[in-house]
Length: 329
Image 1 (cartoon, rainbow, N blue to C red):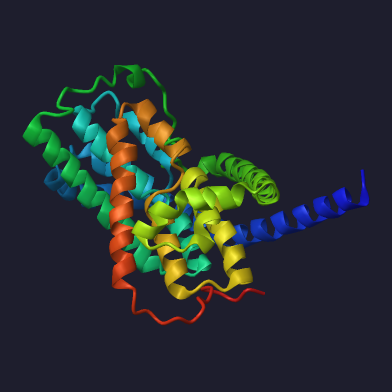
Image 2 (cartoon, helix red, strand yellow):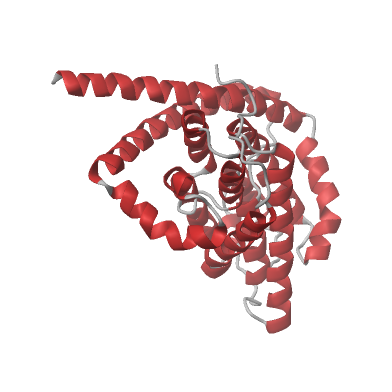
C-alpha cells in the first residue's frame, strides 16, 4: 500500500469517526428516551389521541396506532404494527397509500429532527412541516380516492395476518426485552458507521471523477425551481436518496466547513425533512401494497412545491452564515 493510500485511509477513518460521534451524541439519548416512553404507554396514548384525526382524514382508527408508532419510533416499528393489526385492518388502496405516504413524510421524528436541529435547522418548524405535510397529503389522497373511485378496491392483508409479530417488533415491548433492544441498537449503530464510511468513499470518488459536478448540473433545473443553492446539491441528494440520518450527518460536516447561509441551510434541511430515503423507505411502503404514484411521485412533487414556496418566503432573510444548533467543538 502506497503512502498516499495509507494517508487517505487514515483520513477516511478519522472523518467517519467524527461524523459517527456527532450522530451518536444526538441519536442515542433520544433513542433511550423514546424507549422509556414506550414502556409507559406513550405510543398507545398517542394512537388514541390520533384516532379522531384519522377519522377526519378518512382513515380507520387502527391507522392512528400505526402512524403514532411510525412517527415516534421508526418505519420498521410501524411495519411491525401493520403486520400485528393485519387481521383486523379494513382499508382500500387509497387509504393504504395515504397512510403509507403519511408514514414516509413523518417517521422517527425524535431522532431525525434532533439531527436536523444539530445541523442548524429548527426542530419545531421542520417537525411541524413534516406533520402538516403528512396530514394534508393524506387527506388529499383519501379525498381524491373517495371522489373519483381511484384506488377504491379493498386491500387484502391476509398475506400479513399469518405473521407472528412480537411486541418488540411493534415498538411496544416490555422491560424484559431491554437486552434485545440494546443489542439491536448496537447493531444499528454499527451499520450506521459502515454506511457513513461508504458514503464518504462514494462522495470522494464522485469528486475525483467529476460526477459531483455532473450530478449538480443535472439537478440545477430542480434547484432553480425550489430555490436550493447548488452548494448543497451533492449532500442534499445523498440524503434524498439514502436517508436523513446520513444526509444530515454530511450536512452538519459541510456546514461547519463552508458556513452555509442561513436560508441555504434551512431550505436544504426542509427538503431533506420532507423527502428522504427515496429508495429504501419507498420500497418498504410499495411492498406493503401502496401505490407508487402516491408514495413517490406525488410526495416529491409536493416537496418541490413546498420548498419553492419557502424559498420565496425567505428571500429577505439575513445573509449571515448559518450557525449550528450546538457548539462545533
